[in-house]
Image (cartoon, rainbow, N blue to C red; front, side, top):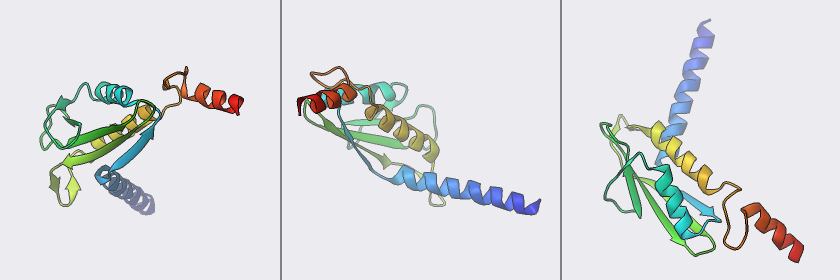
Length: 139
């Protein structure tokens, strides 16, 4: 029984360390969405967060939280594809741990999932998968 508790505590600790490390990382996401569409996806994903000033194209903080981190997002690219950079530009920490790291990590993952989904419309085509099929047919 004590071994199970120790293993469970170790698993929880390792998960928290992993999430803390991932929340601190900068993510660069290549997306088939045009810059305008990627910006719309970012706005949609963070519609319930408070826009704040910061170093990114978009900067958001969760509402009604003490020590709320700022998630900054920069969108760059062309009308065919874009690169979205996501990072925590401001955060408070305690004992080397970021406040609300889990929330930040989940929101980063959700945005990446939306930006890289297969059904994004590509300019001139119905979807990203139809773009690939069309390219294969032409070749």
